[in-house]
Length: 192
Image 1 (cartoon, rainbow, N blue to C red):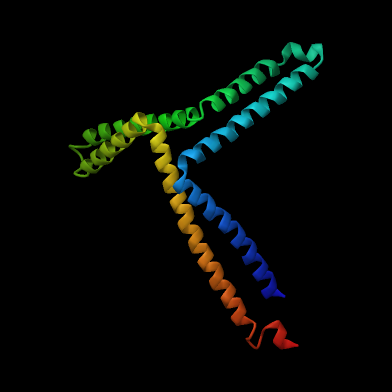
Image 2: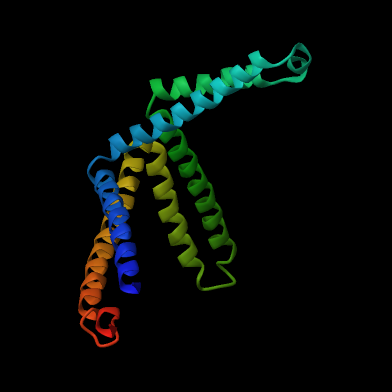
């Protein structure tokens, strides 16, 4: 009974692992399409929430409408959703640009800190190197945000694929161990 339960758990985990592997492979081989699908889903979410706000506004009484922000909020959210549908790369470019600016600013502080501690510590050079690498990465993200996002998704997809393959191998090892355990003297079938 316990072995059957473990076997069922392993089978269900194998199913989710295979789905994760497929997702990882899609991200590796089709990151641009993945970005567009993710942006489309976010656009649908904005439009859906905006539509709910608009419906809520038109259902409200005159008294509730006086203080309600549902109309303007609904229009703004629907507008953002439509904008994202028209410009599927816009969200990715925006997010990647923000990340690039954050890395750039942080790296500039790191370089300033390196020069500030130059007379105090002989480790200042490490901060200078890390700051220089950060500035390079930040500039790359700012100059080519969409390609940078695609590269990031490829890396994430590779990690997902690799870990999924390891999980699949581990599942088959566990299943083989369970098959071998059926023949042991303490197994449930042998107790009867």
